[in-house]
Amino acid sequence: KNIRFEKKFAELNERVYVDESQIEQIVLNLFLNALDAMAAHDEGTLTVQTRLATMPIQLLKKGEMVNENLPAVEVTIRDTGEGIDLKNIEKVF
Image 1: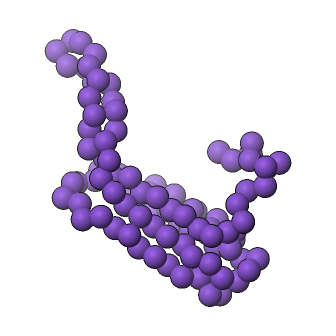
Image 2: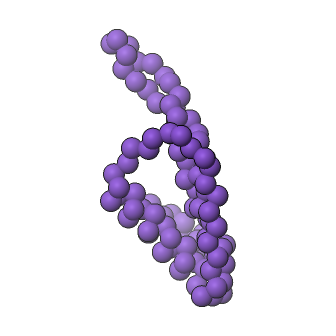
């Protein structure tokens, strides 16, 4: 297949705490779904992009709930497939 892979990784100095096996399974599933979506045309582009973002979170500090924005890494995965038919969109997740 004529599928191009593009990486657009931001230079990040943040540590990322994830379950390696779970994140690997998630990314693998997303890649396989993307390849299936582009299979009809035997060509396309799969793009993975990262960026530093903030994530709003509630924390308990000194017995009081506070809102904070913590640093996070956002990962975006895109493909040039046809997308999900509207009649199936409710089945996603």
